[in-house]
Amino acid sequence: MMYSDIPAAQTLVLYFKSRGVKNIVISPGSRNAPLTISFTKNSFFNCFSIVDERCAAFFAMGMAQHLQEPVAVLCSSGSAMLNFYPAVAEAFYSDIPLIVISADRPSYRIDIGDGQTIRQENVLEKHIGYSANLKQDVSHATNTIAKYGKSLLHESQKEIQKYNEGEIAKALSVAFDEKNPVHINVPFEEPLYGRVEEPSLQIQDAGASVKKEASDDQDSDKLGQIWQNSPRKMVLVGVNQPNAMETEVLERLAKDPNTVLFTETTSNLHHPEFFESIDSIIAPIEKSEKRDKLFKKLQPELLVTFGGLIVSKKIKAFLREYKPKEHWHIDPKKANDTFYCLTKHIKTNPNQFFKEVVSEEIKPTSDFKTFWEKKKDNYEAKRDAYLKEVPFSDFSAFDQIIKNIPKGYQVHLANSSTVRYAQLFPMDKSLKVFCNRGTSGIDGTTSTAVGSSVFSDDPTLLLTGDLSFFYDSNALWNKYMRPDFRIVLINNSGGGIFRILPGKEDTEEFETFFETSHELSAKHLSDMYGFEHITAKNEAELEASLQGFYLDSNKPKILEVATPRVLNNKILLGYFDFIS
Image (cartoon, rainbow, N blue to C red; front, side, top):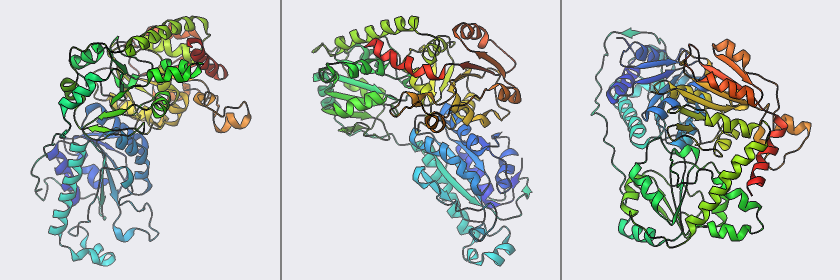
Protein backbone atom coordinates (compact mmCIF):
# COMPACT_ATOMS: atom_id res chain seq x y z
CA MET A 1 0.00 0.00 0.00
CA MET A 2 1.04 3.58 -0.63
CA TYR A 3 -0.13 6.96 0.55
CA SER A 4 0.46 10.50 -0.57
CA ASP A 5 3.05 12.28 1.54
CA ILE A 6 0.60 15.19 2.01
CA PRO A 7 -1.13 15.05 5.45
CA ALA A 8 -4.60 16.13 4.24
CA ALA A 9 -4.68 13.34 1.67
CA GLN A 10 -3.59 10.77 4.25
CA THR A 11 -6.14 12.06 6.75
CA LEU A 12 -9.06 11.84 4.33
CA VAL A 13 -8.14 8.33 3.21
CA LEU A 14 -7.69 7.10 6.79
CA TYR A 15 -11.08 8.51 7.81
CA PHE A 16 -12.79 6.89 4.85
CA LYS A 17 -11.16 3.60 5.77
CA SER A 18 -12.18 3.99 9.41
CA ARG A 19 -15.82 4.74 8.52
CA GLY A 20 -16.08 2.08 5.82
CA VAL A 21 -16.41 4.27 2.72
CA LYS A 22 -15.09 1.76 0.20
CA ASN A 23 -16.28 2.89 -3.24
CA ILE A 24 -14.49 5.80 -4.88
CA VAL A 25 -15.33 7.14 -8.37
CA ILE A 26 -12.44 9.14 -9.77
CA SER A 27 -12.33 11.58 -12.67
CA PRO A 28 -8.76 12.00 -13.92
CA GLY A 29 -6.75 15.13 -13.22
CA SER A 30 -3.52 16.37 -11.71
CA ARG A 31 -4.53 18.40 -8.66
CA ASN A 32 -6.36 15.39 -7.21
CA ALA A 33 -3.26 13.17 -7.65
CA PRO A 34 -2.52 12.95 -3.88
CA LEU A 35 -5.94 11.42 -3.27
CA THR A 36 -5.96 9.33 -6.44
CA ILE A 37 -2.64 7.78 -5.44
CA SER A 38 -3.80 7.12 -1.89
CA PHE A 39 -7.12 5.53 -2.90
CA THR A 40 -5.89 3.45 -5.84
CA LYS A 41 -2.81 2.13 -4.02
CA ASN A 42 -4.90 0.89 -1.09
CA SER A 43 -6.62 -2.49 -1.52
CA PHE A 44 -9.39 -1.52 0.90
CA PHE A 45 -10.99 0.71 -1.75
CA ASN A 46 -12.88 -0.12 -4.94
CA CYS A 47 -11.85 2.59 -7.40
CA PHE A 48 -13.68 3.41 -10.63
CA SER A 49 -12.41 5.73 -13.37
CA ILE A 50 -15.02 7.87 -15.15
CA VAL A 51 -13.68 10.67 -17.37
CA ASP A 52 -16.78 12.87 -17.67
CA GLU A 53 -17.40 14.46 -14.26
CA ARG A 54 -21.14 14.77 -14.72
CA CYS A 55 -21.35 11.08 -15.59
CA ALA A 56 -18.99 10.22 -12.73
CA ALA A 57 -21.20 11.94 -10.16
CA PHE A 58 -24.38 10.23 -11.37
CA PHE A 59 -22.52 6.91 -11.60
CA ALA A 60 -21.48 7.30 -7.95
CA MET A 61 -24.98 8.40 -6.99
CA GLY A 62 -26.52 5.35 -8.66
CA MET A 63 -24.12 3.15 -6.75
CA ALA A 64 -24.99 4.88 -3.45
CA GLN A 65 -28.69 4.58 -4.27
CA HIS A 66 -28.34 0.85 -4.86
CA LEU A 67 -26.07 0.09 -1.90
CA GLN A 68 -27.85 2.50 0.45
CA GLU A 69 -24.48 3.70 1.73
CA PRO A 70 -22.12 6.62 1.02
CA VAL A 71 -20.09 6.53 -2.19
CA ALA A 72 -17.44 9.15 -3.00
CA VAL A 73 -16.72 10.95 -6.25
CA LEU A 74 -13.38 12.74 -6.70
CA CYS A 75 -12.25 15.36 -9.20
CA SER A 76 -9.49 17.83 -9.95
CA SER A 77 -9.70 21.59 -9.42
CA GLY A 78 -11.52 24.21 -11.46
CA SER A 79 -14.68 23.77 -13.51
CA ALA A 80 -14.47 19.97 -13.14
CA MET A 81 -16.39 19.99 -9.89
CA LEU A 82 -19.17 22.20 -11.27
CA ASN A 83 -20.12 19.25 -13.46
CA PHE A 84 -20.93 17.35 -10.25
CA TYR A 85 -23.70 19.78 -9.39
CA PRO A 86 -26.66 18.13 -11.22
CA ALA A 87 -26.02 14.84 -9.39
CA VAL A 88 -25.50 16.67 -6.09
CA ALA A 89 -28.90 18.36 -6.45
CA GLU A 90 -30.55 15.04 -7.29
CA ALA A 91 -28.89 13.36 -4.30
CA PHE A 92 -29.96 16.24 -2.05
CA TYR A 93 -33.64 15.92 -2.94
CA SER A 94 -33.56 12.11 -3.09
CA ASP A 95 -31.72 11.61 0.24
CA ILE A 96 -28.75 9.82 -1.27
CA PRO A 97 -25.40 9.99 0.61
CA LEU A 98 -23.07 11.13 -2.18
CA ILE A 99 -19.65 12.33 -0.97
CA VAL A 100 -18.11 14.95 -3.26
CA ILE A 101 -14.35 15.43 -2.93
CA SER A 102 -12.80 18.28 -4.89
CA ALA A 103 -9.09 18.96 -5.02
CA ASP A 104 -8.40 22.69 -4.93
CA ARG A 105 -5.57 25.11 -5.60
CA PRO A 106 -4.07 27.01 -2.66
CA SER A 107 -6.00 30.11 -1.62
CA TYR A 108 -3.20 32.38 -2.85
CA ARG A 109 -3.67 30.99 -6.37
CA ILE A 110 -7.37 31.90 -6.57
CA ASP A 111 -8.52 34.98 -8.53
CA ILE A 112 -5.04 35.97 -9.69
CA GLY A 113 -5.38 34.66 -13.24
CA ASP A 114 -4.05 31.15 -12.60
CA GLY A 115 -5.41 28.27 -14.69
CA GLN A 116 -8.01 25.77 -13.47
CA THR A 117 -8.97 27.87 -10.46
CA ILE A 118 -12.45 28.91 -9.39
CA ARG A 119 -13.99 29.77 -6.01
CA GLN A 120 -14.60 26.18 -4.90
CA GLU A 121 -15.30 26.70 -1.21
CA ASN A 122 -19.02 26.33 -0.42
CA VAL A 123 -19.88 26.33 -4.12
CA LEU A 124 -22.51 23.61 -3.53
CA GLU A 125 -23.92 25.13 -0.33
CA LYS A 126 -27.52 25.48 -1.53
CA HIS A 127 -27.89 21.73 -2.15
CA ILE A 128 -25.52 20.04 0.27
CA GLY A 129 -25.82 18.55 3.74
CA TYR A 130 -22.43 19.81 4.86
CA SER A 131 -19.49 21.62 3.27
CA ALA A 132 -16.09 20.79 4.75
CA ASN A 133 -13.44 23.22 3.53
CA LEU A 134 -10.14 21.79 4.67
CA LYS A 135 -7.16 23.98 5.44
CA GLN A 136 -3.94 23.68 3.50
CA ASP A 137 -1.14 21.77 5.21
CA VAL A 138 1.82 24.00 6.12
CA SER A 139 4.21 21.11 6.66
CA HIS A 140 4.14 20.40 2.91
CA ALA A 141 5.73 22.82 0.39
CA THR A 142 6.52 25.17 3.26
CA ASN A 143 8.96 27.27 1.22
CA THR A 144 6.33 27.93 -1.46
CA ILE A 145 3.78 28.89 1.20
CA ALA A 146 6.27 31.26 2.81
CA LYS A 147 6.80 32.91 -0.57
CA TYR A 148 3.19 33.28 -1.76
CA GLY A 149 0.87 32.64 1.21
CA LYS A 150 2.78 33.67 4.28
CA SER A 151 -0.38 34.32 6.30
CA LEU A 152 -1.13 30.58 6.24
CA LEU A 153 1.90 29.99 8.47
CA HIS A 154 0.15 31.73 11.38
CA GLU A 155 -1.42 28.38 12.21
CA SER A 156 0.63 25.36 13.16
CA GLN A 157 0.37 22.03 11.35
CA LYS A 158 -1.00 20.54 14.57
CA GLU A 159 -3.86 23.08 14.64
CA ILE A 160 -4.59 22.50 10.95
CA GLN A 161 -4.59 18.75 11.43
CA LYS A 162 -7.08 18.99 14.30
CA TYR A 163 -9.37 21.27 12.26
CA ASN A 164 -9.27 19.07 9.17
CA GLU A 165 -10.05 15.92 11.13
CA GLY A 166 -13.03 17.60 12.75
CA GLU A 167 -14.39 18.74 9.39
CA ILE A 168 -14.00 15.34 7.77
CA ALA A 169 -15.66 13.64 10.74
CA LYS A 170 -18.63 16.05 10.58
CA ALA A 171 -19.08 15.53 6.85
CA LEU A 172 -19.03 11.75 7.14
CA SER A 173 -21.50 11.81 10.03
CA VAL A 174 -23.95 13.83 7.93
CA ALA A 175 -23.55 11.44 4.99
CA PHE A 176 -24.11 8.34 7.12
CA ASP A 177 -26.65 9.59 9.63
CA GLU A 178 -28.74 12.01 7.58
CA LYS A 179 -28.38 10.38 4.13
CA ASN A 180 -27.37 13.74 2.69
CA PRO A 181 -24.73 14.56 0.08
CA VAL A 182 -21.65 16.27 1.50
CA HIS A 183 -18.76 18.22 -0.01
CA ILE A 184 -15.11 18.02 1.10
CA ASN A 185 -12.84 20.58 -0.56
CA VAL A 186 -9.10 19.91 -0.20
CA PRO A 187 -6.42 22.45 -1.23
CA PHE A 188 -3.07 21.01 -2.37
CA GLU A 189 0.21 22.70 -3.23
CA GLU A 190 2.78 21.13 -5.54
CA PRO A 191 4.62 18.77 -5.55
CA LEU A 192 1.60 16.45 -5.81
CA TYR A 193 3.09 13.03 -6.50
CA GLY A 194 5.18 12.29 -3.43
CA ARG A 195 4.48 8.87 -1.85
CA VAL A 196 5.15 6.99 1.38
CA GLU A 197 4.54 3.33 2.12
CA GLU A 198 2.97 3.98 5.52
CA PRO A 199 0.98 6.98 6.77
CA SER A 200 3.01 9.52 8.68
CA LEU A 201 0.17 10.39 11.05
CA GLN A 202 -2.55 8.82 13.17
CA ILE A 203 -6.09 10.11 13.08
CA GLN A 204 -8.08 10.76 16.24
CA ASP A 205 -11.21 9.01 14.97
CA ALA A 206 -13.48 7.70 17.72
CA GLY A 207 -15.25 5.46 15.23
CA ALA A 208 -18.48 5.73 13.30
CA SER A 209 -21.25 7.72 14.93
CA VAL A 210 -24.39 5.93 16.01
CA LYS A 211 -27.46 7.28 14.30
CA LYS A 212 -30.20 8.37 16.65
CA GLU A 213 -33.61 7.15 15.65
CA ALA A 214 -36.01 9.97 14.90
CA SER A 215 -38.37 10.41 17.79
CA ASP A 216 -42.06 10.73 17.07
CA ASP A 217 -43.88 12.76 19.67
CA GLN A 218 -47.29 12.08 18.12
CA ASP A 219 -49.91 10.25 20.16
CA SER A 220 -50.35 6.92 18.35
CA ASP A 221 -53.63 6.20 20.13
CA LYS A 222 -55.08 9.55 19.06
CA LEU A 223 -53.88 9.10 15.49
CA GLY A 224 -55.30 5.59 15.50
CA GLN A 225 -58.71 6.91 16.52
CA ILE A 226 -58.64 9.49 13.73
CA TRP A 227 -57.68 6.77 11.26
CA GLN A 228 -60.38 4.42 12.57
CA ASN A 229 -63.08 7.09 12.39
CA SER A 230 -62.21 8.47 8.96
CA PRO A 231 -64.57 7.02 6.32
CA ARG A 232 -62.60 8.48 3.39
CA LYS A 233 -58.86 7.88 3.64
CA MET A 234 -56.32 8.17 0.86
CA VAL A 235 -52.76 6.81 1.12
CA LEU A 236 -50.46 8.17 -1.58
CA VAL A 237 -46.98 6.68 -2.00
CA GLY A 238 -44.13 8.34 -3.87
CA VAL A 239 -40.65 7.04 -4.62
CA ASN A 240 -39.96 4.08 -2.35
CA GLN A 241 -37.09 1.62 -2.06
CA PRO A 242 -37.85 -1.95 -3.23
CA ASN A 243 -38.89 -4.27 -0.40
CA ALA A 244 -39.01 -1.41 2.09
CA MET A 245 -42.58 -2.15 3.23
CA GLU A 246 -43.47 -5.26 5.19
CA THR A 247 -46.08 -7.63 3.77
CA GLU A 248 -48.08 -7.49 7.01
CA VAL A 249 -48.44 -3.72 6.69
CA LEU A 250 -49.46 -3.89 3.03
CA GLU A 251 -52.13 -6.47 3.85
CA ARG A 252 -53.58 -4.29 6.60
CA LEU A 253 -53.80 -1.31 4.27
CA ALA A 254 -55.28 -3.43 1.49
CA LYS A 255 -58.00 -4.79 3.79
CA ASP A 256 -59.07 -1.39 5.09
CA PRO A 257 -62.47 -0.90 3.38
CA ASN A 258 -62.33 2.89 3.78
CA THR A 259 -58.90 3.45 2.24
CA VAL A 260 -57.90 4.08 -1.34
CA LEU A 261 -54.15 3.49 -1.74
CA PHE A 262 -52.53 5.11 -4.77
CA THR A 263 -49.11 3.88 -5.86
CA GLU A 264 -46.80 4.82 -8.70
CA THR A 265 -44.35 2.66 -10.60
CA THR A 266 -41.57 4.23 -8.51
CA SER A 267 -43.35 3.23 -5.27
CA ASN A 268 -42.34 -0.43 -5.65
CA LEU A 269 -45.56 -1.47 -3.90
CA HIS A 270 -47.92 -4.07 -5.29
CA HIS A 271 -51.28 -5.48 -4.24
CA PRO A 272 -54.48 -6.24 -6.21
CA GLU A 273 -56.35 -3.82 -3.91
CA PHE A 274 -54.03 -0.90 -4.66
CA PHE A 275 -54.57 1.67 -7.44
CA GLU A 276 -51.53 1.59 -9.74
CA SER A 277 -52.40 4.16 -12.40
CA ILE A 278 -53.42 7.43 -10.78
CA ASP A 279 -53.85 9.33 -14.04
CA SER A 280 -56.23 6.67 -15.37
CA ILE A 281 -58.56 7.46 -12.47
CA ILE A 282 -58.27 11.24 -12.58
CA ALA A 283 -58.16 11.94 -16.35
CA PRO A 284 -61.74 10.71 -16.97
CA ILE A 285 -62.96 12.93 -14.12
CA GLU A 286 -61.28 15.95 -15.70
CA LYS A 287 -63.22 15.29 -18.91
CA SER A 288 -66.55 14.56 -17.20
CA GLU A 289 -69.54 16.91 -17.11
CA LYS A 290 -69.82 15.88 -13.44
CA ARG A 291 -66.22 16.92 -12.78
CA ASP A 292 -66.80 18.79 -9.53
CA LYS A 293 -69.16 16.16 -8.13
CA LEU A 294 -66.75 13.32 -8.89
CA PHE A 295 -63.72 15.16 -7.54
CA LYS A 296 -65.60 15.83 -4.31
CA LYS A 297 -66.42 12.13 -4.16
CA LEU A 298 -62.69 11.34 -4.51
CA GLN A 299 -61.67 14.04 -2.02
CA PRO A 300 -60.31 12.33 1.13
CA GLU A 301 -60.94 13.46 4.68
CA LEU A 302 -57.54 12.13 5.65
CA LEU A 303 -54.53 12.01 3.32
CA VAL A 304 -51.49 10.02 4.42
CA THR A 305 -48.32 10.13 2.33
CA PHE A 306 -44.91 8.55 2.53
CA GLY A 307 -41.96 8.04 0.19
CA GLY A 308 -40.32 10.55 -2.13
CA LEU A 309 -41.64 12.82 -4.83
CA ILE A 310 -44.85 12.13 -6.76
CA VAL A 311 -44.78 11.80 -10.56
CA SER A 312 -48.46 12.46 -11.34
CA LYS A 313 -49.26 16.09 -12.00
CA LYS A 314 -52.93 15.23 -11.98
CA ILE A 315 -53.01 14.00 -8.37
CA LYS A 316 -51.08 17.08 -7.27
CA ALA A 317 -53.51 19.42 -9.02
CA PHE A 318 -56.50 17.52 -7.59
CA LEU A 319 -55.32 17.54 -3.97
CA ARG A 320 -54.29 21.19 -4.13
CA GLU A 321 -57.82 22.12 -5.19
CA TYR A 322 -59.78 19.53 -3.21
CA LYS A 323 -57.79 19.55 -0.01
CA PRO A 324 -58.24 16.94 2.72
CA LYS A 325 -59.08 18.00 6.28
CA GLU A 326 -55.79 16.49 7.42
CA HIS A 327 -52.58 15.56 5.65
CA TRP A 328 -50.02 13.45 7.49
CA HIS A 329 -46.60 12.75 6.00
CA ILE A 330 -44.57 9.87 7.42
CA ASP A 331 -40.80 10.21 7.17
CA PRO A 332 -38.04 10.25 9.80
CA LYS A 333 -36.32 13.17 8.08
CA LYS A 334 -38.54 15.60 6.19
CA ALA A 335 -42.07 16.40 5.10
CA ASN A 336 -42.78 18.29 1.89
CA ASP A 337 -45.97 20.32 1.91
CA THR A 338 -46.65 19.27 -1.68
CA PHE A 339 -50.40 19.91 -1.53
CA TYR A 340 -50.30 23.03 0.70
CA CYS A 341 -52.31 21.35 3.45
CA LEU A 342 -49.77 19.49 5.62
CA THR A 343 -51.01 19.16 9.20
CA LYS A 344 -48.65 16.58 10.73
CA HIS A 345 -45.09 15.43 10.10
CA ILE A 346 -44.85 11.97 11.65
CA LYS A 347 -41.14 11.31 12.20
CA THR A 348 -41.04 7.56 12.12
CA ASN A 349 -40.76 4.60 9.77
CA PRO A 350 -43.94 3.92 7.75
CA ASN A 351 -43.93 0.25 8.77
CA GLN A 352 -43.90 1.18 12.45
CA PHE A 353 -46.54 3.85 12.02
CA PHE A 354 -49.07 1.67 10.20
CA LYS A 355 -48.58 -1.22 12.63
CA GLU A 356 -49.45 1.10 15.51
CA VAL A 357 -52.29 2.98 13.82
CA VAL A 358 -54.08 0.65 11.40
CA SER A 359 -56.32 -1.92 13.02
CA GLU A 360 -56.56 -5.36 11.46
CA GLU A 361 -60.34 -5.19 11.65
CA ILE A 362 -62.04 -2.07 10.30
CA LYS A 363 -65.69 -1.99 9.28
CA PRO A 364 -66.77 -0.23 6.09
CA THR A 365 -68.38 3.13 6.85
CA SER A 366 -68.59 4.51 3.31
CA ASP A 367 -68.57 3.45 -0.33
CA PHE A 368 -65.33 5.41 -0.89
CA LYS A 369 -63.19 2.44 -1.83
CA THR A 370 -65.82 0.29 -3.56
CA PHE A 371 -66.92 3.18 -5.81
CA TRP A 372 -63.40 3.84 -7.06
CA GLU A 373 -62.64 0.14 -7.43
CA LYS A 374 -65.35 0.00 -10.07
CA LYS A 375 -63.71 2.91 -11.88
CA LYS A 376 -60.40 1.07 -11.70
CA ASP A 377 -61.90 -2.11 -13.16
CA ASN A 378 -63.43 0.00 -15.93
CA TYR A 379 -60.23 1.70 -17.04
CA GLU A 380 -58.28 -1.57 -16.92
CA ALA A 381 -60.80 -3.21 -19.24
CA LYS A 382 -60.91 -0.20 -21.55
CA ARG A 383 -57.12 0.05 -21.67
CA ASP A 384 -56.95 -3.49 -23.03
CA ALA A 385 -59.64 -2.69 -25.58
CA TYR A 386 -57.87 0.51 -26.64
CA LEU A 387 -54.58 -1.31 -27.17
CA LYS A 388 -56.29 -3.58 -29.68
CA GLU A 389 -57.49 -0.58 -31.70
CA VAL A 390 -54.48 1.72 -31.90
CA PRO A 391 -51.57 1.53 -34.36
CA PHE A 392 -47.93 1.12 -33.28
CA SER A 393 -46.87 4.04 -31.09
CA ASP A 394 -45.19 4.95 -27.81
CA PHE A 395 -48.33 3.80 -25.99
CA SER A 396 -48.48 0.30 -27.48
CA ALA A 397 -44.68 -0.07 -27.37
CA PHE A 398 -44.54 0.65 -23.63
CA ASP A 399 -47.27 -1.91 -23.02
CA GLN A 400 -45.35 -4.57 -24.93
CA ILE A 401 -41.97 -3.68 -23.41
CA ILE A 402 -43.17 -3.63 -19.80
CA LYS A 403 -45.02 -6.93 -20.18
CA ASN A 404 -41.82 -8.60 -21.41
CA ILE A 405 -39.36 -7.49 -18.72
CA PRO A 406 -38.04 -10.68 -17.08
CA LYS A 407 -38.84 -11.18 -13.41
CA GLY A 408 -36.33 -9.95 -10.88
CA TYR A 409 -34.76 -7.26 -13.07
CA GLN A 410 -33.60 -3.92 -11.71
CA VAL A 411 -35.37 -1.31 -13.86
CA HIS A 412 -34.21 2.29 -14.22
CA LEU A 413 -36.62 4.74 -15.82
CA ALA A 414 -35.56 7.94 -17.53
CA ASN A 415 -37.57 11.06 -16.80
CA SER A 416 -40.05 13.02 -18.89
CA SER A 417 -42.21 10.81 -21.16
CA THR A 418 -40.65 7.52 -20.06
CA VAL A 419 -41.60 7.61 -16.40
CA ARG A 420 -45.04 8.98 -17.24
CA TYR A 421 -45.87 6.27 -19.76
CA ALA A 422 -44.67 3.68 -17.25
CA GLN A 423 -47.35 4.85 -14.81
CA LEU A 424 -50.08 3.67 -17.18
CA PHE A 425 -49.14 -0.02 -17.20
CA PRO A 426 -48.74 -2.56 -14.37
CA MET A 427 -45.26 -3.86 -13.62
CA ASP A 428 -44.48 -7.27 -12.20
CA LYS A 429 -44.02 -7.12 -8.43
CA SER A 430 -40.59 -8.79 -8.68
CA LEU A 431 -39.13 -5.79 -10.53
CA LYS A 432 -37.13 -3.20 -8.60
CA VAL A 433 -37.81 0.24 -10.07
CA PHE A 434 -35.67 3.38 -9.78
CA CYS A 435 -35.91 6.87 -11.25
CA ASN A 436 -34.16 10.17 -10.50
CA ARG A 437 -37.22 12.01 -9.21
CA GLY A 438 -35.43 14.37 -6.82
CA THR A 439 -35.00 16.99 -9.51
CA SER A 440 -36.68 14.97 -12.30
CA GLY A 441 -34.04 15.94 -14.86
CA ILE A 442 -33.12 13.99 -17.98
CA ASP A 443 -29.41 14.49 -17.25
CA GLY A 444 -27.56 11.52 -15.82
CA THR A 445 -30.25 8.84 -16.03
CA THR A 446 -28.04 6.44 -18.00
CA SER A 447 -25.04 7.09 -15.75
CA THR A 448 -27.18 6.44 -12.67
CA ALA A 449 -28.37 3.11 -14.07
CA VAL A 450 -24.83 2.03 -14.95
CA GLY A 451 -23.52 2.92 -11.49
CA SER A 452 -26.41 1.11 -9.84
CA SER A 453 -25.78 -2.01 -11.92
CA VAL A 454 -22.19 -2.52 -10.76
CA PHE A 455 -23.04 -4.26 -7.48
CA SER A 456 -26.52 -5.48 -8.38
CA ASP A 457 -27.31 -9.16 -7.86
CA ASP A 458 -29.75 -8.90 -10.75
CA PRO A 459 -29.47 -7.70 -14.36
CA THR A 460 -30.35 -4.07 -15.07
CA LEU A 461 -32.69 -2.59 -17.68
CA LEU A 462 -32.66 1.10 -18.55
CA LEU A 463 -35.88 2.22 -20.20
CA THR A 464 -35.21 5.62 -21.74
CA GLY A 465 -36.26 8.16 -24.32
CA ASP A 466 -34.07 9.49 -27.09
CA LEU A 467 -33.27 12.93 -25.65
CA SER A 468 -32.32 11.49 -22.26
CA PHE A 469 -30.17 8.85 -23.91
CA PHE A 470 -28.25 11.09 -26.30
CA TYR A 471 -27.86 13.81 -23.67
CA ASP A 472 -26.06 11.36 -21.36
CA SER A 473 -24.29 9.28 -24.00
CA ASN A 474 -20.92 9.62 -22.24
CA ALA A 475 -22.40 7.32 -19.61
CA LEU A 476 -21.42 4.42 -21.90
CA TRP A 477 -17.77 5.53 -21.83
CA ASN A 478 -16.45 3.28 -19.06
CA LYS A 479 -15.08 -0.19 -18.37
CA TYR A 480 -17.80 -1.28 -15.94
CA MET A 481 -20.63 -2.14 -18.32
CA ARG A 482 -21.90 -5.62 -17.53
CA PRO A 483 -22.86 -7.92 -20.42
CA ASP A 484 -26.31 -8.34 -18.86
CA PHE A 485 -26.97 -4.59 -19.00
CA ARG A 486 -29.89 -3.78 -21.28
CA ILE A 487 -31.18 -0.50 -22.72
CA VAL A 488 -34.57 -0.09 -24.38
CA LEU A 489 -34.45 3.23 -26.21
CA ILE A 490 -37.74 4.72 -27.36
CA ASN A 491 -36.71 6.93 -30.25
CA ASN A 492 -39.60 9.15 -31.26
CA SER A 493 -37.26 11.66 -32.90
CA GLY A 494 -37.61 14.39 -30.28
CA GLY A 495 -39.12 15.51 -27.00
CA GLY A 496 -42.48 13.90 -27.49
CA ILE A 497 -43.83 15.07 -24.13
CA PHE A 498 -43.99 18.65 -25.41
CA ARG A 499 -46.67 17.60 -27.88
CA ILE A 500 -49.07 16.81 -25.03
CA LEU A 501 -48.32 19.98 -23.05
CA PRO A 502 -50.11 23.34 -23.45
CA GLY A 503 -48.52 25.49 -26.14
CA LYS A 504 -48.02 22.74 -28.71
CA GLU A 505 -47.77 24.11 -32.23
CA ASP A 506 -47.06 22.61 -35.62
CA THR A 507 -44.40 25.15 -36.46
CA GLU A 508 -40.70 25.08 -37.25
CA GLU A 509 -39.98 27.04 -34.07
CA PHE A 510 -41.83 24.50 -31.91
CA GLU A 511 -40.06 21.54 -33.49
CA THR A 512 -36.65 23.21 -33.13
CA PHE A 513 -36.80 24.81 -29.70
CA PHE A 514 -39.33 22.72 -27.76
CA GLU A 515 -39.63 19.30 -29.32
CA THR A 516 -36.03 19.43 -30.64
CA SER A 517 -36.77 17.01 -33.44
CA HIS A 518 -33.84 15.03 -34.83
CA GLU A 519 -32.91 12.04 -36.99
CA LEU A 520 -30.26 10.49 -34.70
CA SER A 521 -29.79 6.77 -34.18
CA ALA A 522 -27.90 4.93 -31.44
CA LYS A 523 -26.23 2.62 -33.98
CA HIS A 524 -22.88 4.46 -34.12
CA LEU A 525 -22.72 4.85 -30.34
CA SER A 526 -23.45 1.14 -29.96
CA ASP A 527 -20.60 0.25 -32.29
CA MET A 528 -18.19 2.64 -30.58
CA TYR A 529 -18.91 1.39 -27.07
CA GLY A 530 -19.25 -2.30 -27.89
CA PHE A 531 -23.00 -2.79 -27.54
CA GLU A 532 -25.12 -5.12 -29.60
CA HIS A 533 -27.66 -2.93 -31.41
CA ILE A 534 -31.16 -4.04 -32.41
CA THR A 535 -33.87 -1.98 -34.08
CA ALA A 536 -37.64 -2.30 -34.15
CA LYS A 537 -39.90 -0.09 -36.25
CA ASN A 538 -43.25 -1.79 -35.84
CA GLU A 539 -45.15 -4.09 -33.52
CA ALA A 540 -44.02 -7.32 -35.20
CA GLU A 541 -40.35 -6.31 -35.14
CA LEU A 542 -40.61 -5.28 -31.48
CA GLU A 543 -42.21 -8.59 -30.55
CA ALA A 544 -39.53 -10.54 -32.41
CA SER A 545 -36.70 -8.46 -30.91
CA LEU A 546 -37.91 -8.91 -27.34
CA GLN A 547 -37.85 -12.69 -27.66
CA GLY A 548 -34.06 -12.84 -27.61
CA PHE A 549 -33.22 -9.47 -26.10
CA TYR A 550 -32.77 -10.68 -22.52
CA LEU A 551 -30.93 -13.91 -23.32
CA ASP A 552 -27.37 -14.24 -22.01
CA SER A 553 -24.78 -12.47 -24.15
CA ASN A 554 -21.15 -11.42 -24.22
CA LYS A 555 -22.10 -7.80 -24.82
CA PRO A 556 -24.63 -5.38 -23.35
CA LYS A 557 -27.52 -4.63 -25.70
CA ILE A 558 -29.50 -1.65 -26.94
CA LEU A 559 -32.94 -2.18 -28.43
CA GLU A 560 -33.87 0.98 -30.30
CA VAL A 561 -37.60 1.28 -30.90
CA ALA A 562 -38.62 3.86 -33.51
CA THR A 563 -42.11 5.28 -32.99
CA PRO A 564 -44.09 7.87 -35.02
CA ARG A 565 -43.25 11.36 -33.72
CA VAL A 566 -46.44 13.14 -34.78
CA LEU A 567 -48.88 10.31 -33.97
CA ASN A 568 -47.75 9.47 -30.41
CA ASN A 569 -49.38 12.38 -28.61
CA LYS A 570 -52.70 11.84 -30.37
CA ILE A 571 -52.80 8.19 -29.30
CA LEU A 572 -51.92 9.03 -25.69
CA LEU A 573 -54.52 11.77 -25.42
CA GLY A 574 -56.98 9.48 -27.21
CA TYR A 575 -56.46 6.89 -24.44
CA PHE A 576 -57.77 9.27 -21.81
CA ASP A 577 -60.74 10.09 -24.03
CA PHE A 578 -61.41 6.38 -24.59
CA ILE A 579 -61.43 5.39 -20.91
CA SER A 580 -63.66 8.37 -20.13
